[in-house]
Figure (cartoon, rainbow, N blue to C red):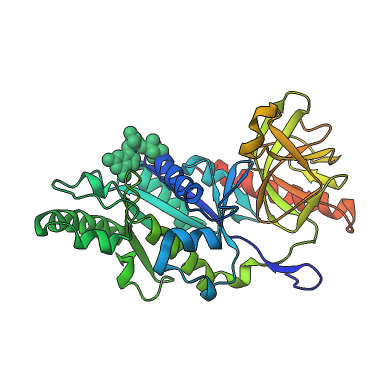
Length: 356
Ligand code: GDP
């Protein structure tokens, strides 16, 4: 990691996982929705396959829970495709692509098979995570307090409702403990390295969403600052989310870039079915901003993208590229060296998937 010319702090990459129907999609939608209505200029940026929520917007949503002066990380980048399947195949240099994860657990349903699978993957990849104990609004007698921090919302609940919810929350804490994680309500956790913070939330009412963002931001700032220090102008490194046919562009790659930058005309090496592909970037594409959606052009061309970001790469010869495979910018290095790097990393991923 270098911090010279292009030294900077990148956005941590956040993945959302958990059992089907526990509310992953709803929670992501709620975060996006809160950001859009937060009133902050440039509240969110829609990337290819990801949503960037800047610090100013997080602070606006989280209110007194996030003082922007306490942070120098630029915000959070949420991967839009939830689910542990995509999570487990998305790697960066042997680790998980996501720097941090939100494990969503329905308070009524508790741990389910896919919750356990997700936990196994988080353990194996040593990904720090928090638990979003979702659907608190379904507690009998719940008095909804839209978009408020959870402790404030709890004060507005009857003793009976609060007690009912607490029982469910402690069941989740118990289940985490059965899986070798010591856990507690997030506001009681001092050391997030050794303990899992549980954040009660509702993706329906937005209660606890301020807390969720505050905890993700706080954890990243406290424990990940070093990993986030990158050379934002160095040769880019990323992971393929999807290989997609796109009218007018042929086969394209949706990529999450986690290091350096990528530019139009860069030579890139991409992991593929057989030998790695070596090709030249024709265009870098981002979603068209909402205001301009009527132009019917879905994408806008950009000259350069810096980590962390989601971007679509249009280039020749991408047909054999693999989802989950590494993408590397060559730039000032030797092509052979980069090809070897990609080959080795791909071999590691394949060994790993074979084990499952
Ligand atoms: P996913 O499969 O994990 O992505 O789950 P979804 O986001 O699709 O949610 C599954 C169902 O639960 C949908 O009908 C949602 O409307 C509902 N749901 C999700 N979160 C909440 C919540 O916080 N409260 C309530 N009442 N319903 C929720």
